[in-house]
Image (cartoon, rainbow, N blue to C red; front, side, top):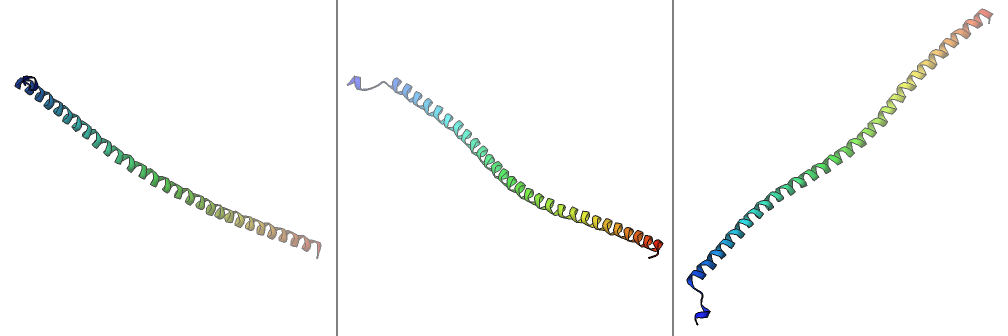
Length: 110
């Protein structure tokens, strides 16, 4: 029967080693929990940045479409001014030619 039992000293040594192991595991769990919390925070930041980038891309796409539309409208306005100028020049040239032809006819006696 003596072989089935362990001494008090062996029991205390075993208990201390188990307690030390539990303490080490608790400390490791605490460190890992801290790292997990940091990673969760970083993951939230990354998700927030991704959402911001998506919104920015949508906004830029909208701005690009608006710029194209404004470019088309500006082209129409520029053409209108050019057409107006060409009409004014055309009417002026026509008037001057009319005056010259009228003057020449008057000089010829017609």
